[in-house]
Length: 313
Image 1 (cartoon, rainbow, N blue to C red):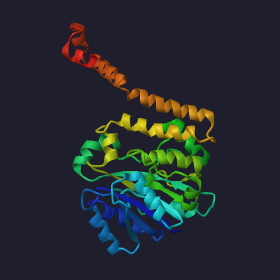
Image 2: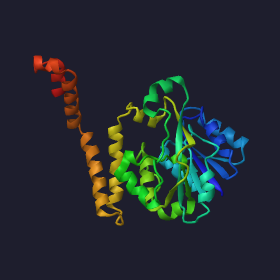
Image 3: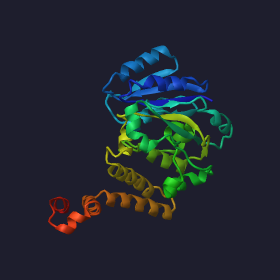
Image 4: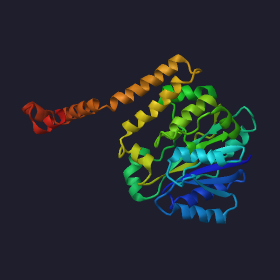
């Protein structure tokens, strides 16, 4: 196997060395491609040092040296890759020693176009653990059962939480299948959840097989400045970001003639439900209902209670 590991780098000077060295522990890793996305910290300098230390490490930036987000940054890494297989790794995450154990066996079958596994969690500080442990705990992010490849796409769309999740850090893909079957890779229109949208489409076009699901093959690093961590913890409004995600999924489904009508209808309903939930009117009445439950006695004492009127008007 010749694996290209693609690492988008943004504001990760403290973590990127660990990510790179976790990838270089494997003989199967042919190259580590760093794509620096105009970081505000010293990540570019750290990346340059890594290219000097390790022959397998290659460094790229966007042609305008600007900030384009994780999606276009991963796309540039795919474009520059030369391995037969592609694996992704976020710059603040890292691989475990068993990362490619299942892949080495499964990819002997040419019908296997992709393999996914489970990831664990690591808290980089006590502050991060204190803030985010109630959200992530010590649990695995994984698909809960071993599914046939044809069931992976509908499972993600219909079953959502009961199906489980696989992360891009635990995904390995045949490069030729990806390029041949996916006319669009990561969407530049999404700043967040672009990996989730990509995984939906990927699981529709490619046959993805389960690897190791009962123990972690990679680790997600949780720290205070991780953007997706802030979304999951509701520091960034998750409803608004999911509206954009499902809008993109819906646009794709509407323009993909091979998707069955019942799946298109379900995707449209998902998009509409998030869109309605995020509307100003829904937010206002949500606040009113929440207040009515939490301060019912005050409301009984007078509809003109100032807090209630503030939410109502």
